[in-house]
Length: 119
Image (cartoon, rainbow, N blue to C red; front, side, top):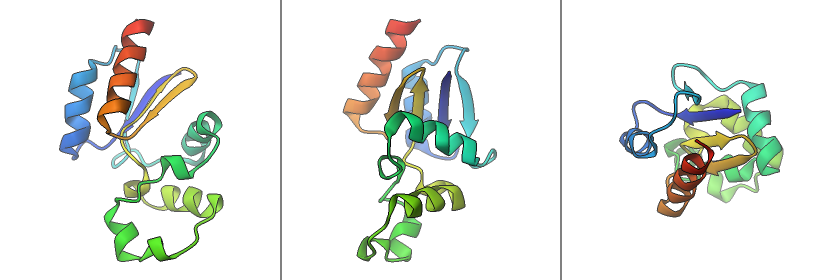
């Protein structure tokens, strides 16, 4: 499966999507207009092995709810990601058995290399 979860209102996501020049084989899911399902989150979890790596600690709601002062479990991370799209670290790019999470330069470069190699 080749899929990307992103936020169309996020300039960083838009820039990365343009930079990656995703082939048409990629399914693009705007998580604001097409909310994440349990199945979506589970398929990401099956590759990463944990929910925390999918979770954005930079989300406004994370700060507003003072979640940094709380010991969150894997189940908490899962439920928060399902509760509100801002808790997903974006973009998430799945290229078969590889997953690239977030917008760090290193992650984007690794995704770019994997996508080019798989074309």
